[in-house]
Amino acid sequence: MTATPFCSDPTIAHYDTEAAAFFATTVDVDMSPLYAPFLDKLALGAAILDAGCGSGRDALAFRERGFAVTAMEPSPVLAKLAEAHCGLPVVIRRFQDIDWHARFDGIWACASLLHVPMMDLPDVLARLARALRSGGVLYASFKYGRGERERGGRRFTDLDEARLAELLQQVPELELIETWVTADRRPGREDERWLNALLRR
Image (tube, rainbow, N blue to C red; front, side, top):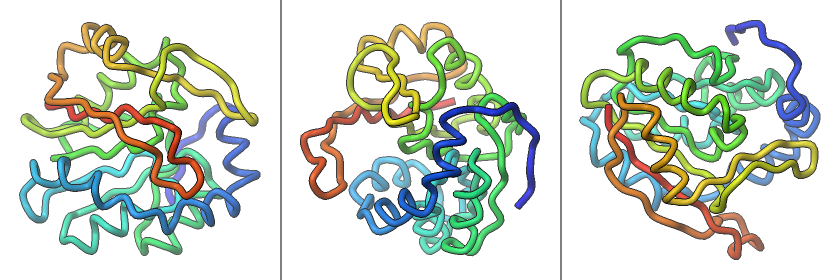
């Protein structure tokens, strides 16, 4: 793992403490229906950043499909589990510290940007845009709703279509391709809804 220093964050601390449990409940979730809209816009072998890779589940899936994957995770403990699972080095970095430039064809931010405070999201999205090559694609997902909240030691920023549109007015580097709403794919949580978005640099 390669590390970038960052200040203490309660959400990161939560994932450090609960890493084993989070890994166990997410690593085997079938996310393949969500891969298609994203991967269909990328050439085989394209460079993908799995931003907030969690268990490493999606990084492994993209690697097995022939893509060049970089995995990033803010939680050092979870990053170690992800490395063992996906067989890739995991960069330990917060979204607020991303400084790549024109490096990736696609960025996958599945259930990860939702932990970024609303006030930081315009800057973070601009950082992700700069990390994309021209024409590159960003996938992001948020719990469906509006506003910020704390639950179980983690903070969340919820978005709906209108709030996302307002947010993107502050990030001219990104163009909205499409949004769609899905149910949570974890067993027993099908009543939870997610806003999915595809954006282009």
